[in-house]
Length: 184
Image (cartoon, rainbow, N blue to C red):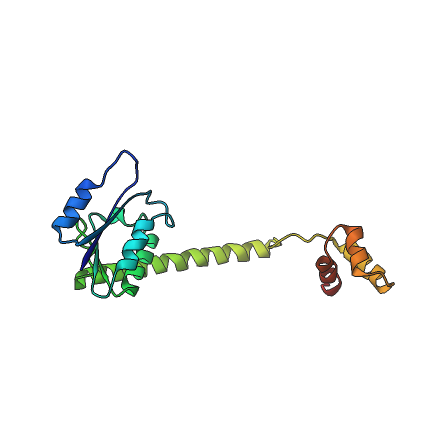
């Protein structure tokens, strides 16, 4: 079965033209909504369309930009469609048609490129972190207590004061006092 999805992003637009084309392509069921493509969690009709897919069904859109705004979004949605055992087709973008071996190949290459891009970004971030650490940059949340305060806390605790009393004096929680005592 072919299931259609139509979307417009502005209130003054209509999706009648998309619906006509989806019907002409053989879609038996069509989900349509007025929602921005930037929103990845507000497209409820798209979610419903994907949930309606069964094995060997095909989700059809008029143009690829009606489904996704980025390669990452597209690949995530295509993975959801594939998980349902279904396929995908964009009428105006014949290269994006998982019902053909050529379309599958193109999308596999796109997925590989997206994965490559993610790895490059991760590598650049890691290199930046290593450079910052080499320059003495401290990562994470700043310490509540400085070295002198931690030393005085250790002395007072060894003299018999409780963690609760120390926490009150230093305006922090007992967990902070405990970490100050257990971390050099």
